[in-house]
Amino acid sequence: MNIHEYQAKTLFKQYGIPIPQGRVATSAFEAQHIAKELTHDSWVVKTQIHAGGRGKVGGVKVAQTPSEVFTWATHLLNTRLVTQQTDAHGLPIEQVLIEKTYPIKRELYLSLLVDRRTERLIFVASIAGGMDVETIAHQTPEKIITVTVHPATGLQSSHCRKVGYALKLEHHQQKQLSVIMQGMMNLFLEKDANQIEINPLIETQTGDLMALDAKINFDDNAIALHPDILALRDAHQENPKEHEAEQFGLNYIALNGNIGCMVNGAGLAMATMDLVKLKGGLPANFLDVGGGTNAEKVCEAFKLILADGNVRAVLVNIFGGIVKCDIIAQGILAAMAQIHVHVPVVVRLEGTNAQEGRDLLNSTQFELYAANDLNDAAQQVVALAKGVAR
Image 1 (cartoon, rainbow, N blue to C red):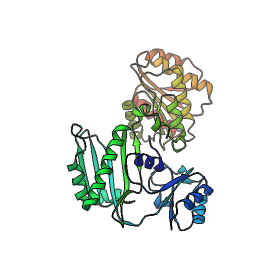
Image 2: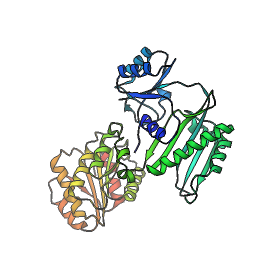
Image 3: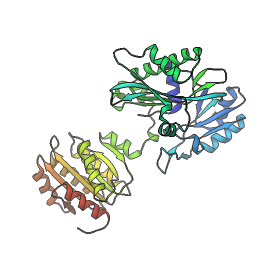
Image 4: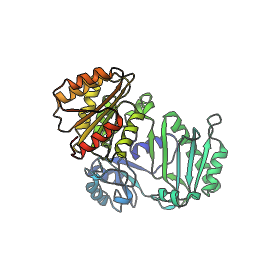
């Protein structure tokens, strides 16, 4: 689960990580009022969306007067921002963060995340922070340093010194960095985060370190243990269909193709999508109905797929183990009875009660295409999506 920058900075402050002075606003009048209260000579107006790259596309503006803060807030609020991390529709801007500006001497990079390869937490740091850090990591990887933290020892002063040396910090800055890294570690562990990123971590002209930006991602599997974090969720920043799917316990990810896929099991779902692409098609979604599904969930999954206007054909690929194929068949028929099905549906059933499921589908008045195996199913659905009769 992602949260907004202003929410992440609130958590940073609780864990002793220095942040700029600022507050969030939901209207231009409120933004102007905040600027007046934050007595200063200039302010930054930052759009609050769950995506990076805001500064490159006009989502971050500097204002010299409170009235200019009002103008920029009016320009940004209640619009949508498209960045390289969003789709073509972008994300809605419902809040802007108003902060004091600070004279920047250097922009650094610091993050904490899980290294799946070593099964450890690692700090990643670079003397080259800012908007182009991804390019820097790709073109000049020698500017990136990683420090692995062993769970038995936790964060040590030696870890902080190594990062500080790589960032070319002075002695007093090294102490500040130690506080920041320890705060990141405590926040990460206590709130079950997946990643904490500060980009940029700035060095001001006075030599102080400060988190100018903040990004935190939390582990969805542990979020129920943290109601305070769950309360920060902004469903408006999520894909509506993905959010709806979650309410029914479905794993759904929207894609850009035209072939809807409904499968039980994440591995089988990925294999199904791979085979569809191999046959020349493009999946419209990833959808795993799970191992312990029922007719109601299947019905909702089917309706979710067909709600995508780009879908031209649907492939249902079920291997009955825990879930029984006749239950899947009942869900498919229930969905087709409730909504207008305007696209061809290819069904492949194997495993527990597969024949019973096939019998149910074959006895219906709906036009369904039976597949002998997964290869046959993929070929059929790609052809049907292209308008080729089978």
